[in-house]
Image (cartoon, rainbow, N blue to C red; front, side, top):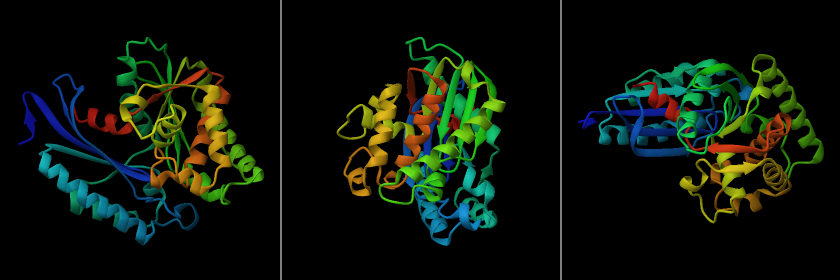
Length: 315
């Protein structure tokens, strides 16, 4: 089991601060993803409280391991030959990360790789740009890929390969917990979050010449949710979201609307995943600030991201 024709069947798991995701796909001999078999996402909020306590909470580990049990079963059913499990921001910083590692090892038979920001950036870039480059629209390079996660945001500039990258400590969970604590958040809370975002963009710009970017490519759940809202979708449609182009003024409008809405109003929108209702305001604000600072007219949204990059790395 595990091959189809000459393809290699691989399973990629991306465990972030907010969500854990699985991709089982086949790679052709040239190392291009060819036949996607399964793509799953669960919001487990692994990073719940890590910013404050420095530890992974017992209930957060329980939620994550429950999702891992399900994913491991599906990987076995589909006969993947190789598994790569990548863990990002929350586990990098946690005092009890050994407990997490042991739980992953028991379920998947592989060590979770707690990757550096630079590795994260390279995987995000390869995953996101593979499809943008083949889009046929002729998006000019260099690309700036921004990957807005729960605990961190990656800025990655490049053409075919990464030229420069920087991970900064702003993410939708981190900013929500730190600043956007009222429902809806106050103007003062939004201003404080915006200051954090601007300071982080300044740090990124010291390492990455972000203003050289000709095409802004946005990936991960905050960006794809903003796209789905902007497109006015009645239900989430991955095919409509992938490679959509959202004008800068639309990004600003969607973000302002989300930040002005209550939890109940956001929850009533069918394209907002239940696990993202609390944090989408912060995620949209990060995107809007980046768009503003770059002065580009639009963001190209990719459903392919670090998960696809992890799969490609097993070619």
